Length: 257
Picture 1 (cartoon, rainbow, N blue to C red):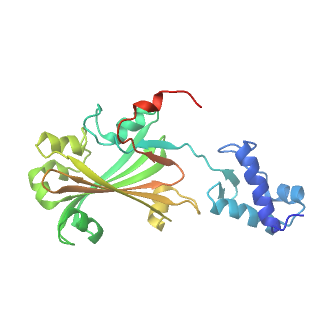
Picture 2 (cartoon, rainbow, N blue to C red):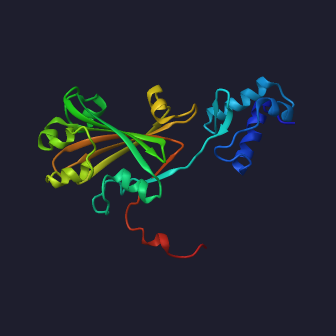
Picture 3 (tube, one colour):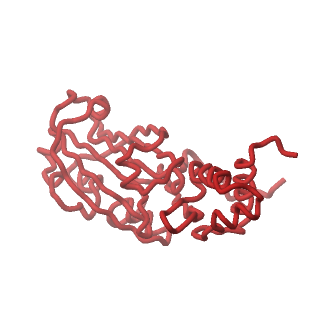
């Protein structure tokens, strides 16, 4: 006999069935009453088991609609190619990468002039509270909230590149726009972290309980100084990042030994 509490046994049994595909992405689980009969357990026990799966990000619950298996159509981002002008692309890197993956990109956009947060100021090498321009994108893939991207540009750069304050998107992408002015991003430093979302992040990204966010901070540099700092906040369950570094010719060669 299992030493696990009954609600954990219920959760484990349902998790195995979700993994096997008995309940596929988007499908509804049986009602609490049906599960109570199946497992010979109380409704409270069944609810506790289901709530455990909710907290783990496997299912979601809706008032009056029961429990549904969450969809996990993961988008894979090649971060070493993202915004790299040596790779051909038309428009900004996000739209190009999503379209190339056979998915549909969509984003909303806003621009603000604001005081630079300390976290960003440290990376841009400006005084905390100094003026910067924030370009903020709320991004979707196939109409599902996928990420937010907040890019800060220092005030000195905005004076040289005034389109950074345009309230609409820059069609060719800001990296290409700056390069056209002779302000080329020649390198970047990435920092990657994860944590649980803030209430605002959970709202924007439609994140259920138990799902973390992935924070990707990229600071871009010209030959002389930092020119921007971008913080991309992504749903941890719907995104995967990879990097390609060095000579990878051997990747496609040889046989399995």
